Image 1 (cartoon, rainbow, N blue to C red):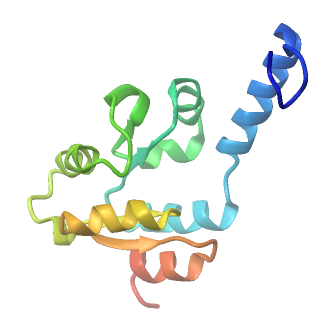
Image 2 (cartoon, rainbow, N blue to C red):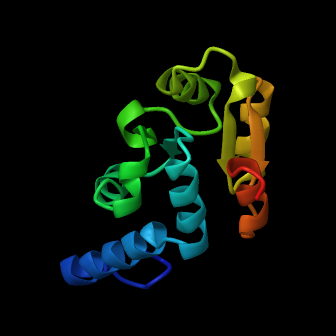
Length: 141
């Protein structure tokens, strides 16, 4: 029995909860997508590194913006999770860049940024404003 809702939710409610969870985690920020499109158009290579579980990674792969990513690395497929150092090593390999200081890691979690920085990556802690992302990824106008 689930204490939070008082009873087993049943198959219908479970499907609805999964759909709501999927919608929440796969919603996109139009401002971020705009910056990514502009960066992609200038030739900035991008790799997605996500702690998404299997069902979410499948959905994320269907999004239009996903095609801008050279590769997508998901925890569920790698059997690793941020902030484990090995997952950042996988991401570095995916970029084919030897010097981690030439890679910018962007994440909304500070602990993930700190873990990436310990491996030598430059980091940007994304807190909801596209200004820092724009500055880091796009040439000055």
